[in-house]
Image (cartoon, rainbow, N blue to C red; front, side, top):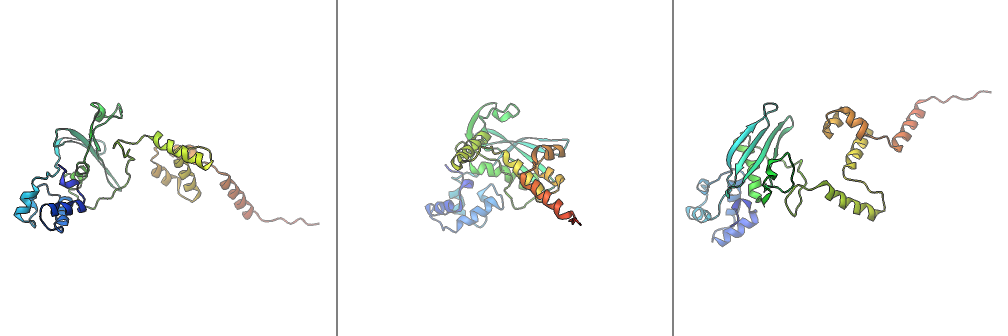
Length: 253
């Protein structure tokens, strides 16, 4: 049976109709689940007792914390959660000056085979439901951090929409190569776009140290020597600037 926390408002409206109740109840339930973060129907006090009893046939996702580890270096916290079917997943809370970042699991297990990751040891078991992924974020937003703020989805990792696994760089490069061939231009990989961004940023006046932070480089040397390139356009512009600044000397007879 579908976890009610994975349902959209439209799906909740259809469920209300099926249960013989009014569609407007869908927004109330959605608010209880995603704004008030309740895990029990008994807490939904603006719903009738009869409706709450009917809804108990639809489980609400609730993660059980098994273990937490906190880094002594920067306070990063790694949590181990147990799902309703017994599987365990990991997620990580990282705190930065610009805000908090949460790395969540999208699967129970993984088939990628990364040696540094414990999630891949037993292989892939299943993809997580939307509510199981969302619950990881809500755990940190509320009970773990004490911060009740609007969630801003950014810095999202590219996911293979067929499998739910992290997408391989080669997959995007393959599609990009096809586009290059169709356009009749020389092939380039996705990573080359970082070089383009760095070069254009410097040309537009972005400070090197700022660019270093944006690219996430430990050394400014990596930013300026490997990623920033001198283009024909910038060379021509430099010559024009020099000529414009040099006074014209008239030849006298």
